[in-house]
Structure formats: C-alpha cells, structure tokens
Length: 612
Picture 1 (cartoon, rainbow, N blue to C red):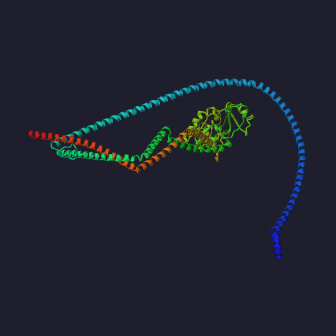
Picture 2 (picture 1 turned 120 degrees about the horizontal axis):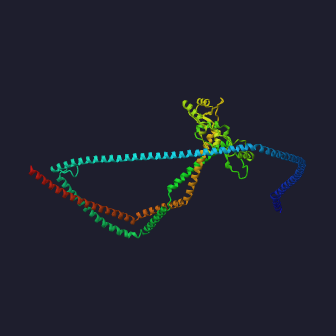
C-alpha cells in the first residue's frame, strides 16, 4: 500500500510539475502584462487630456489674434475705399480736362488736317502716275521676256537643225563606207571566182573549203557521209523499236503498281491544284512586295529625318526664344493678327551666310523692332496688348524709308573695283516680302556692306555713307569708327535662316511621311493577305516536294521515272532519225551534184585539149 501511495504521490508531483506549475507561471506573466497595459493605458489617457487642453489654448490664442487682424483689415479696407473715392473724383476731373483739351486741339488742328488732306490727294495722284509707269515698264519686261524666250526657241531649233544635218551627214558617210566595202567585196569575189575557174580547169575544187581536196576525194567523202547517215538512221530506228517494246512492258508494270500509288497520285494532284490556286490568288491580289518594302524603307528614313529636324527646330527655337519672343493679347475682340507683321529679324532672309555679321550690325537694335500695318494698330498694342517687355513699333503707313541714290551706289562700286573688292547695298543682301519693303528700307536702306576695312573707309569718305565690313566694323560719315570683338555677332540671323530652312524641310518631310503612312495603311490589308498566301504557297510547295519524293521512292515511282527516261530517249532517237535522214538526202544530193560536175570538167578538159 505504501508503494501505491508513493506512486500516487509521484503521479501528483508529476502533474504539478508538468501541468499546474507551468500554468501558474503563465498566469502570473499574463497578470504582470495586464497590469503594465493598464498603467500604459492610464498614462495615454492622461497625455491625451494634456494634448487636448494644449490645442484648446493654442486655438483660443489664434482666435484672439485673428480677431485683432480682422479689425485691422477692416480699417485698411475703409481707408482704401476713401482713397478710391478720391481717385475716382480726380479721374472725373481729368476726363473733363481731357475733353476741354480735345476740343481745343480739334479746333487748332482742323486747318493742319485740311492741308495734310490736300497733300494726301496730291501724293495719291503721283502714286497713280508712278503705278501706271510701273505697269508700263512691267509690260515692257514681259514683252522682252517673251522675245527672249522666242530667241531661245530659235536657238534651240537651230541646234536641232544642226544636229539633224550632222545625223544626215553621218548616214551618208555610212552609206559611202558601205559602198566602198561592197566594191572591195566584189573585187574579192572576182579574184575568188578566177581562182576557182583555174582550179576547176586543173581538176581541183574549192567550193567545200580551203582544204584543197580534189573532186574525186569530195565525191568519195560525200558517198561515205551519206552511207554513215543512213547507218545511224537505221541504228536509231532499231533503238526506237527496242525502247518501244520495253516501254510497253514498263507501262504494263506501272498499271499493276498504279493502284498502290493511286492515293499518293490523288494527293499529288490535289496539292498541285492547291499550288495553282494559291499562285492564281497571289497574282490577283495586285500587291507589289518591292513597292511595299520601298515604302516601308522610305517611312523609316522619313521618320528619322522628321525626328532629327524636329529636334533641330526645337533647339534653334529655344536658342532664339529669348531674343525673338514677342507675345501679346488681342487688344480688342476679333482683332486681325495679320496686321502685326512681326519682328524685323523674322521678316528677312539672309541670302549669303557670310553677310550675317555685317547685316546684324547694320540693323542693330532695329532688328528686334515690331512691324505693323498702321500706327493705330501699334497704339492698340501698346495700350491694350499686355506686352511683357518694351518694344519699338514700325507702322508701315507712317515710317519713312531710307534709300540710297544711284550715284552713291555707282561711286561705291567704282572705288571697290579699283581696290579689287566688292560692295553691296545692305538691302540687296536680304530677302523680304514687298508688303514690308518700307520697314526693311528703313532698317537697311542707307548702309553699304563692304569686303575690307580699307575699301569701307575710302567709300565712306567719298560718298558720306555709313559702311559696314563683313567682320562688323562700322565707318560713320561723322568720322567715328567702331569694331572689335565680334562675340556672337551674326549668330541670330544665321540661326533664323537655319531655322526657316529646317522648318520648311520639316513641313515637307512631315507631309510626305503622312502620305507614305496613308499608302502603307491602305496596303496593309493586301500585305497581310499576300503574306498569308505566300506562307500557304511555301507550305503547299513543301508538301508537293515531299509527296513527289515519296512517290519516287515507291515501285510505281521508280517505274514512272524509268518510263519518263525511256520516253525521253525515244524522242531523242526520233529526232536523230529525222536529222540523219535529212543529212543522208543532202549528202546523196551533193554526191550526185559532184558527179555531174566531174563529168562536166572532164568534157571541158577534152574540148580544151582538142582546141590546143
């Protein structure tokens, strides 16, 4: 019993050690964690109350501060309203003064206006006369151009006539040469016939070549050739008979094996029909693979070109944007923007790149002035165009163009020729629309561009005209000279010209790219159909080759190859028979002809012997 009790005690201790004690320890740990959590939760609630209290105090302080700011702003608003009332009152007073001044100005300017009106009518009449004279000169130029074209046509006709005469002479020379050749050939024939006659008299024939065979030898050879041809013809006929018998035997064997190859034969015929149908469909598509590939290659080239040109245009535009930017808003609703022509720099095109520096110096700040059609347009832009920078306006109806006299130009040219250099009026070195001529003449009309400092100085002193060298050195009639480092002089006009050319080329290539893309899009359906049919045809040809290879490896296929080979040999033997029969007839004819000639020669020799 004690042992049982001890076992029971050990069991209880084991349970205590393995189950109850770990559970108590776990519960103690959980109790500690719960107490810690409760403490942390209480701390969090207390801190949250502090935070709420702090936010409340801060918000209250901000509210008090905002109330003070609102009162200050209300006081400021009231002060501004009083100022606005005072300004409005002052504006009304100024408007009244303006009205009075306007009435006074109108009364004072009425007389001046009438005088200018009369002057305008006078100038209009002069303009009409000048226009008539210009029209007459224009008609004369047209007539002269027509006469020049007629002269060119006459020259062309003369050249064509000379060409025709040369051709006729060449033809006649050819005919003369041909006649000479015919004469030489006739002489050679006479010599040959004389020799032949002599040979015939001596019993030697020269008709069959230059081997010098005697007539009996030629007769013997003709007889031998005729017999050989007849023998070959007989051999070919025997071969034909033998092959025909063998062909029938092979054909009989083929019929026996035909049933085994019937399935493959039908498959071959079906595949042949399929190949034929696919080729017919390909020809009916009307699709040209070479044209399509050429268009695709052209599209790739155009895309690369457009990309490069667009990048170039963007780069140049970004470089010029700061100097050539002119942005404005419409001064009135429905404003016609064509009245604003743009900056002078954008209205000209430099004809020669090496003149860019000189022309940029000639224009100076005027290069960035804005050209408009009328003064009223320029006033509207300045008043209501919301311009972002100060600009100078050139109204075409008010600006006075600067022109150089012909005497000045001639004197300058003479001096330049003496100094072995060149001189040009600046306005002749730029291209522009006639619409803006007055503005361009105002900027470039009174300056000469000279190649060389010595010539520029001499021309300036002689003509009292402003001159500029190609390097940008300036000689003024007053005696001043300016120059030195060029820095970036000339780059603006050069880049503008480059930008214009790149833009035009970009537009052209973009238009062509659009056209090519549309063509490719329209051909894409045909291309897909062509590719599908081509792929099907390749597959069908492969199937046909595999079937034919299979057939050739069967008994029927081998018999068929043998049958075709024998048929080919029969055809060749038949051709040989025909050829040998023809040769036999020719040789017997030649043999008979030579025998007759031999008899005739014998008679001729006997007659000649009797005469001697």
